[in-house]
Image (cartoon, rainbow, N blue to C red; front, side, top):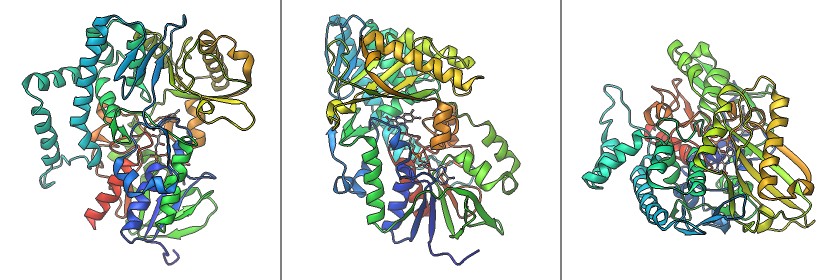
Length: 504
Ligand SMILES: Cc1cc2nc3c(=O)[nH]c(=O)nc-3n(C[C@H](O)[C@H](O)[C@H](O)COP(=O)(O)OP(=O)(O)OC[C@H]3O[C@@H](n4cnc5c(N)ncnc54)[C@H](O)[C@@H]3O)c2cc1C
């Protein structure tokens, strides 16, 4: 093993790896980030909206000084209707609704929206701490949970009971109890299940939604942001901030193995065979990949290996990119909006059903963004970026499923923007398995491991290793697969760096 030139190696230059690297470099560590791809940013290049960029990360990395400018920090959503009777949700998380809507729904939505944001705000401090340890002898493990419990209790008895009730119900029933309008319920059901492997009727589907709603953009809870230059520009700003802080960043440098000698982490071996020594390694790629592939089962407890193999990482989101000759017309909707094609909460559930059995839905739900409506391209063409749910992560015939999914997405778009098919110059559809191959997210899973109740908090990424510390001394875990999960937030990376500082 060569003499280490760096204190810490970070594997992966996604949002979490860059956030962790920046934090550690700020504390004086010599940090090397190794990125498999040709550019830093990771899944930020896949994303098209910001919803949970960690305010600690944004401020400490001074991202505005490194090129982050919000094109809009509070994007409106339009729930599309095939007959052009759209519903527009303006302001953060549909603060104002415009469009034809029963008065009773407006009133019920105002109350439900306020309640969901309130509950999410109570839970949001959880994003900024390592999950409490449950093990015996773990000091005062439950203090942070008790604090959250106290905050929840301070909502008042009725609200506290309601929080408990909705956590145990599902998104479909919650929406159905309060609202009648299918466009509104469809858009909300889509939002609630975005990035998950669950439909609106799946049990425990409300908690992941509250986690999503606990995020903010530019200080506004529930707001959606579009950076100038797109989300890739946000990844680039994070990389620029990290390197300005003294972090060394190497791209095209995939790590093949973590070196463990004498039961301690000693460094890494790149796919090229190059060996780089460091006393600490932070893996900001999926925890299961880290443990099972880069560390290897022989260095791990057999029980942990089994748990890692059983961790669920099914991605249900596909990504569509279209190059269009001109701007499509979604029956009068503002092309700058986030456009949701969901129909109703039932349609979202119907789009999930076949995916459970490895099949493609006839009518996937879509979240459509047209970045060129915000920033026109020099050649006058338009680019459409859409997240399509749901898509099977492991169909028997991958090429066939990709072709069927593309056809289903284009049919959905044609229904809502007649003539769009004739405008398409180029189409690319990334299925979850394509995303896994390109971005290294197991199963193409948004959170590098499903963010479901049984894989959250002290159970994330796996029971027994939820405080960012891997079971091998000197190795730490920091990706979206750790608490509090994914999105272009940097939270897990920041929390991991804090945990390392505390550990000394
Ligand atoms: C279809 C889809 C759409 C999404 N849209 C959005 C969105 O609109 N908004 C949003 O906030 N989030 C979105 N997400 C989620 C978001 O992209 C991820 O949650 C987030 O990128 C996770 O950050 P990370 O830093 O943990 O990991 P990643 O961003 O996955 O970064 C990990 C990095 O490690 C690198 N790497 C992998 N293996 C190795 C290795 N062996 N050696 C060296 N480097 C390696 C990868 O190349 C990658 O750059 C989306 C996800 C999907 C699947």
